[in-house]
Every structure is written in C-alpha cells, then in structure tokens.
Picture (cartoon, rainbow over the protein chains, first blue to last red):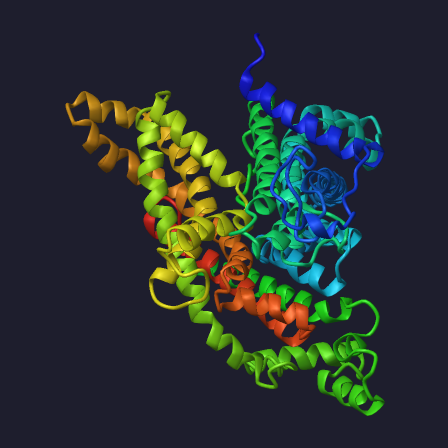
Length: 273
Length: 306
C-alpha cells in the first residue's frame, strides 16, 4: 500500500511538534527576555513571528509552549488511561456490587459536562502545570474506565478465558494476560483522541488564567495575553492559535486512521474544543 | 414500563446525590485553609472566625455535609462573599443569558449540520462530501477561545458589524453563538453523515427506490426518519460539550452568563458561587440527558426503556 497523505502529513506535524517540545531546552531560545523597544514588533528577520506585549519573541515562546502542551497532553493521557483502564477492568471483571458502585461513580463524573469539572478543580487547586494535569486526569479517567469495562464484559465469557480459569489462573493473571491485550485496540484509539483533547483543554485552562503561571509559556496563555492587542498586533493571537489547530487536527486525523486500521467501532472519537 | 421508569429515576437520583457530594467536597480541596485563601493574610482573626462559622467549616465534615444537602433541598445556595447577596439570586440573574446562548448555538449547529451531513451522505465520495468532511474536521480542531477572538477581529474590529462583547440585543448574540456552535456543528455533521450513510444501505431504501420514489422522498421520508435516532442521543451528550464550552465562550465575549460568573468567582475565590455554578450547569446537563432519553423512546416505538 502506498503511504497516504492523510496519514503522512499529520504524522509530520505531530513529529515536528514533538521534536520542538523535546528540543526546546537545548535550543538557544529566549522566551522570557523582555525587550521594551521591541514591544508588539511585527514579524521580522530577527524575530520571525514578531514580539509580544513585553517584547518577548513569539516564536521562542511558541516552541516552549509546545513543550507545555506535549507534557500536559501525554501526562494527562498516561495518568487517566492507566487509572481508568484499571478501574474499568476491575469493575467489568469482578462484577457484583463492586461493579455497581464503580458504575455509579463513573456516572457521577460523566454528569459534569465537558471541561467544567476541570475548570472548577484547576481554579480551586490554583494555577500550575501539576494542578492542570491533576484536574484534567480527574476528568479524563472516566472515558477509559467506561470503555475498558465494556470491553472486559464482552470478553470475559470467551472460551480462552474460561479455559485459563479452569487451569487455575488467578484474576490478576487473567486480566493482564488474557483480557487486557484483547481490549487494548479501542483504548489506544481513545488515548490518541485523548491527547488532542488534553492539548485543547490545557490551552483552554491557560486561556482562562487557570493553567501555567507566568512567565511560563502556554499556547493558551499566549492567546489570552494577545487578545487585548489584536487590532495592533494580530500575530500574537494567530501563531499560538494556528499551532493548537494544526496539532489537534493532526492528532485527530491520526486517530481516525488508527481507528479504521484497528477496526474499532466503539471509541468515542474527537470532541470539539 | 412504569417499573423501568422508576428504576431510571432511582439511578438518576443516585447520580444527582453523587454530583452534590462532589460539589460539596470541592471547597475542601482548596489547598491549605479556604478561609485564609478567601480573606488573604492580612485579615483579622475575628473575621476569620466569623467566616469559618458562616461557611460551617468549624464543624465536623459529616455535619457540614448533612447541612449542605438540607440547604440545597431548600434551594439555599449560600451567600456570595464578593457581592454579599444570596447565590441563588446571582444565578437567577445570569441563567437567562446562558440559556439564550446555548439555545442559539444549538439551533445554529442543527441548521448547519443536518443539511450538510445529509448532502454529504447523499453525494458520498464526491467533492461535496470531501468538503463537508474537511470542514467538520476543522470545526472540531478549532478551539473556541481562538475562533472567538478571530471573529471579533474580523466582524467587530475590521468590519464593525457586531459589538465586540457584552449582551446588548440580537447583534451581540451572533458571534458568541457562532463560536460556541461551530464545534457542535462539526461533530453533528459527521454523525448525521455517518448515520444517513448507514441507513441508505438498508433494504427498505432499496425497496423505496425500486418502487419508483424520487431521491428526495427517499432521503426525507425513509432515510432521515431512521437516521435521526443516533443523532438525537448524540445531541444530548454533546450538549455537555456545549455547556462546558459556554464557560470559555462567555469569558471571551464578556457574556453575562453562568459561565463567566463561574470564572469571576474562581478568580475572586468566592467558593460558594463556584460550587453553585458547577452544580447548576451539571444538573441542567443531567436533566437534558434524561429528557433526551424520554424523547428517544417517544421517537422510536421499538424502544420502551429497556
């Protein structure tokens, strides 16, 4: 099969994003250098994307912001996928009142629409990267739990599981070796969309002033800071917004491709920002 | 049937209680001392004691919880520190604006998504389908805290067609509704398209075509009616994204709704207001979903609350 542009192009965008994020500490960047004569300077050879309201180079801040987005995106997905899968798998496998209680807990968390609970949590815990990851993970685990539970429920009566149980395998071994590997495909697809969701959510929280602390850079807080100068310096808002758009679009396209490839029907898919 | 409704109501009641519990616990998540956080360091000890007593924080957790639920049952949401007024009063002031915005955004999303999704499915594989699918992808990926400012830049600042922010007549509603509705429109377009495509593959569509019905009749009378069901459920679920997104959209446009009240309260550390806003939005979301369930049973006679 020839490589398709609809996969190659997004993969390239995500690759560049990851590269920028990982390389940022070693690049000669000056994201916090305040340069008053260059306040709101338009793009120029010296600063490709211009300077912000404190004369800081926008491109440098964009690259450091890529790091924030990557850290939060993958951090949140790692924590919530791990915790959610574990809880969902236990609920589905053990069943009985454990399942009943866990399903109610999941329902309660699902009752908070969209990013609302994360906003409240981030607001109450106070700003900072760690609190953003906590807030988004507290909201994020539910999707994986629900998915893992459904998968385990549909798999646990299969012959190979019954055979393993008959051979005396314990519940931990059955879950880890016989059930979870089969339940993985939809969870991986969900996690892919989850990275995009976390990137938008982090930027959203930072836009609301509930994310990273200044002077640390986040694409969301760059938009927040730039909004007031839109008429004189639209480049402050355009750069970070395009960065979010491209990264989220690319991840969602990869998620779609992965879903088709793994032939997953149940996954929730992308959610609007 | 009645038994099933009762069971559903009971489980909804459990979830509502859980939501109230979680919201109650929010104030206990404040790092350190919430009273300290609210009053700042320079507060007099007497003020601290008074606030602690007013919030009930000087009593055991269990007692506070029972008291909180008892007050909720009387629709007593406490008093705002900033405004020094009952929180319920503040919410009642802000709720109409949020409802107006949510309904406008939902209507806009439906008006865009249904024709676009149906057309894309009917012209499956053609350039129109490609265009609609691409637009939907873009609509999902574009964050509303970026789309909002861009719309302000173009339509308010450059073209001067609409107000920059605030809530003052119909013109001021346009940009916030577009900002909030775009994401939902994108998701719904994808869903309508997929749903119609699936239905168009059914035998009864082939029968309808075979007996000589025109393409529009087939699409409208036979395909759309059945394609509605999954879309309806999705609308209920996606309304959550809409309500959550309303918080950000309201902040962008200084729209005086519950969402911007929440953000103001967070920044002012006015925790009773924070709790009440979260509670109100979540319960609204729960009610809408329960309602969607009921409508679903009404639309589809095959389902009777299984």
